[in-house]
Length: 170
Image: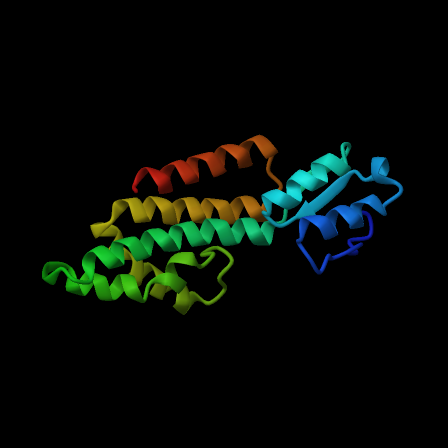
C-alpha cells in the first residue's frame, strides 16, 4: 500500500495456474493503481491481463541486482581472459578480488579508509580496462539516481546507456 508503506500480499508461488487462480479471486481489480514486482516476465504478463489500470513497477532490489550482476559479469570476463595470460597475471589477481570494490556505492560509503582502498584498488585495473571504468562510473550514476528523486525519462535514458555500454563490449 503506497499510502501506508505496508505490504498487502507476498505470493509464495510463481506458477501460472496458481497466479491466475489468485488474481481471479480479487474483486476490485479496476481499483488497483500500482503493483511492484520482481523481474518475472510471466508475472508481468499476468498482471497486465488482470489489472488493466495498474502501473507495474520493478522493485529497486531486483533492478540493482541486475545492474550489479551485469558489471560483475564484465569483471569476470576480463578476469577469465587474463588469468591464463602470463603478461596479465598480476592484473588478473586484482580483477579476481575486485568485486566488492567495484560494486560499492562510493558516495553512500561512510568509511573513509575503505573509500581510499576502493580508489587504490580500482586505479590499476581501470588503466588496463577503460571500459570497466566507464561501467563503474555508470553504476555510481545509477546509485545516485536511486538516491535522488529524478524524472522517469532520465532514469530510462540512464538504463539504456548503461546496458548499451555493457553489451557493446561483448
